[in-house]
View 1 (cartoon, helix red, strand yellow):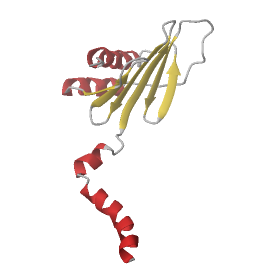
View 2 (cartoon, rainbow, N blue to C red):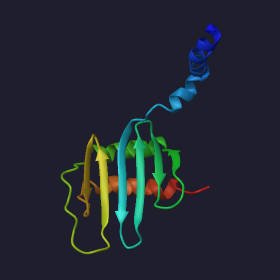
View 3 (cartoon, helix red, strand yellow):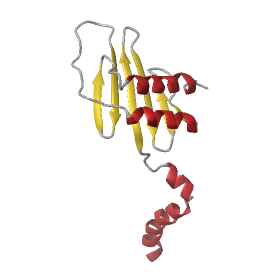
Length: 139
């Protein structure tokens, strides 16, 4: 009788201890450095770039797969330089009309959406767009 009770209790514990530490680290949440999204236009653009603190990125388009890559050291340093000059400011209201692009940045726990790019946003957005062009390529 004790085997019937003990086996279901011990089996999950044994299974968890058998998982390698590297696999457990892979499922640990990653710290996000900056989250960028470009949406809108008549084509229904929806590009999303997440840069993690470890220097890797997650890229996605409206269609196609999600791609995970790691930046070069030079790319990481350049992005950090641009982020030092970033002033998020406040979100803009949605403009009247159609065919507008909406840029959203989440940085240091602040989320701001703009339809026009302030000067401090331009190098950051250009760099993140370059990552999308360079690294997003469905296999």
